[in-house]
Amino acid sequence: MGPGLLFSFVIGYFVILLVVAWYTSRNSNNDSFFIGNRNSNWMLVAFGMIGTTLSGVTFVSVPGTVGNFVPGSTTYKAFSYFQVVLGYLVGYFVIAYVLIPLYYKRNLTSIYNYLQQRFGKFSYKTGALFFIISRTVGATARLYLVINVLQLFILDRMGVPFIVTALVILLMILLYTFEGGVKTIVYTDTLQTSFMLIGLVVCVIYILNNMGLSFGAAMESLSAKGYTRIFDLDINSKSFFLKDFIGGAFIAIAMTGLDQEMMQKNISVKTLKGSQKNIITFSTVIVIVNFLFLLLGGLLYLFMISKGHGYQEKQFLVDGKNMIGDDLFPTVALSYLPQAVSIIFIIALISALFPSADGALTALTSSFCIDMLGLKRREDWDEKKKKRIRMTVHLTLAVIFLICILIFKWINEKSIIGIILDLAGYTYGPLLGLFSFGILTKRKLKDGIAVTIICLIAPVLCYFISKYSGNWFGGYKIGIELLLINGILTFLGLMLVSKKSSGEMV
Image (cartoon, rainbow, N blue to C red):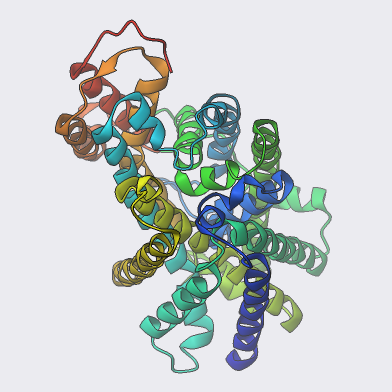
């Protein structure tokens, strides 16, 4: 299929987003941008959050991991990522019944205001700073993944440089988030999630039909190839079941419950009960959808094996290139499937692209304006000045996004999902420690620069623990439980600069 035809669908899709943005951003103000005037429909928020959580990483990277190998072994990773997904489910229940009630009780616009109310200014600013770092790195990694696919399969053939592609995509995102913010994103995310899930289902059904397999027969074929293994029971493995399960629970708590982008949409729902319904509904669907992506990954490998491609020295070779990882799904969809399915794939792919960036850009703008600049508290600034500052921050962050995307292009990693989970362990750990200390103890924190130093030291210690864990602990390798270790180190550090308090635990 010609790149020009595929690119025309990208443009057409963007025009639809602009129309939705224009309609939803009419009569919008700063409250519309930050929290959607606290009038969002919980069902729309729940459905839209699926797209934000999955993003291009799940859409492209998760299927490719199925046929990859566990480091140091000849065993496929198969469905082992589902261990993490099961942990997510536990984490989402903690969010629904511990964190969400806390945010509503305190009527928060930025969830990091909790840290100010509980501890003070330094803790508040430190928490917001770690969110800004975490979400910037995570969102740009996700954005890079999808932009790179569009570049390799469409825009390279049109002679468009990568930097131009990245710049144009970011300009598109700016155009439809500039005015409406959360109020617009609740609707655009719903639209984008719909297209993403349609793309997933269509690809699964087509491959099953093409190979003449029912669901049961497909699972038998996948099992025979060793692709359906879920549980890793090797305690020294980086993906040992308990590590992935517990790590997944804390990743969900940190990357959703302590993340302004995700919670910004939740607290835009009118009532606490509605927000809780949103989280529970969303968490159930996420488990099902992730399983479908893993199923799709196994089917992609079966499909390509049926076409005469296969493994050689731990590489899955297609036309002499290793397709294990992020390149597998795009290669199959755009080179081996019918034109109609390829078009659906492209629409689904860009639907996976935008939710991972538009919400992040909006949430980062909100956090910087509210948490760092104190925009909501500045009574000496009128609404017009606040809006001008907010737009300036929004534009500046888009430039930072572009720089980060170019850095990821320079790194040129084959599997982005591993990078994102590793980085989350380092950047969200201090947030986990801060919030846990506030919720689980009654101690009064001596707020000051020491809090920031503790939150910086903990990730550094985690780096050395992770690097040398095999030597120090008899071959034991740190996996995604690094986040929990980071949180515990932060928690213990905060204990050292705190004192007993007779006040109520909050």
